[in-house]
Length: 179
Image (cartoon, rainbow, N blue to C red; front, side, top):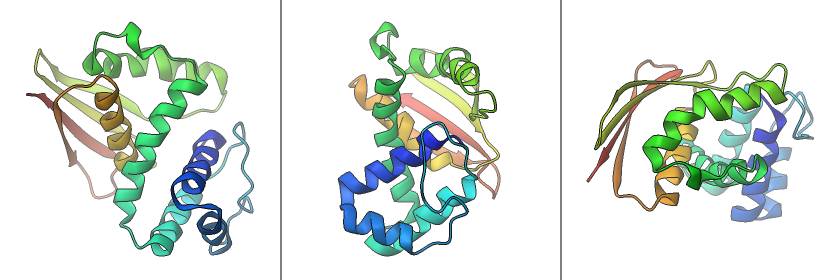
């Protein structure tokens, strides 16, 4: 997993919970990296799981809630870091349909061994979008947060439903319904 995912997570923890919580989180787990991340480094996704579980214990919040919050924060950071003009897309449906062919394609060019999740679309019409998330990492809750923040950025009234398709969370169906 690319280091930017880790550095942004640590930054989010600093901003939302304070440096003391960040340090306690990092000190409470044995990490192969030692908890020292760089944006361009590669780290095992299991370290992210360990960090989120440790944070959940520190702040007494559910892991899933923290992952969704992280996805929301990550959306804005990725848009800024990768200089994505989200307003060149007409709405969240248009943006999300372009993630695979534009944004993830660019990520793969920038980082040789990048392995971002994939998105497939089962249905897209004026008011409904059904998309499937695939990732060996099983971070569907992070994807949910990313999608929720995307919807918010376009100031849309859209209901999002996450439906796990397996126990590992490596495949998830998202249903977006505009009101």
